[in-house]
Image (cartoon, rainbow, N blue to C red; front, side, top):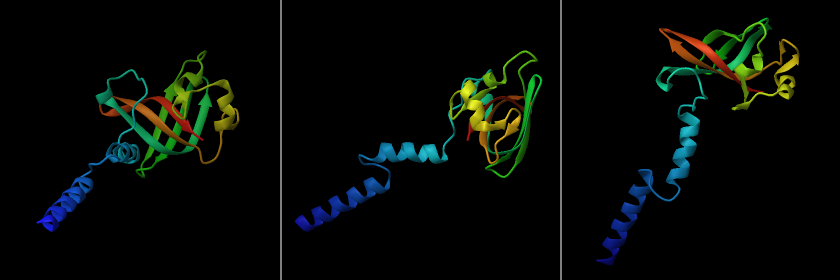
Length: 144
C-alpha cells in the first residue's frame, strides 16, 4: 500500500510542476512574459487598446527643424517609417526615452555620433497610437 501512495504522490508532484505550479512558478511566468509578452506602454495620448509598438533596428534617421523621422526594420521583419513632430522651437528629446527612462541632454552621445547622425546598429521601440487604420508615432525608446 505504501508503494502505491508513493507513486501517486510522485505523479501528483510531477503533474503539478509540469502544469506550472510550484514555488518557482511565479518567477518563471514573469520571466516568460518578459520574453514573449507585450511591452508595457509608456504614457501616451491614446487609450491602451489603441496603442502599438514597433521594435527593431533603426536604419534611417533624420532630425530636422521641428521633426524627427526614423525607419525601422522590425523584429517581425517589416519595414516601418515614422515622423514625429515637436515644433520648430520645441525639443525633440521630449519625444524620446532611453531604455525606458527619461531622455537627458547627456544621452545624445549614446544615440548620435554627431548632431543628426545616428550611431550604426541602434535599436529602438517606436510607440504609436492608432488614428483610424494608421499608427501615429508619439515616442521613441532608444536602446543603444
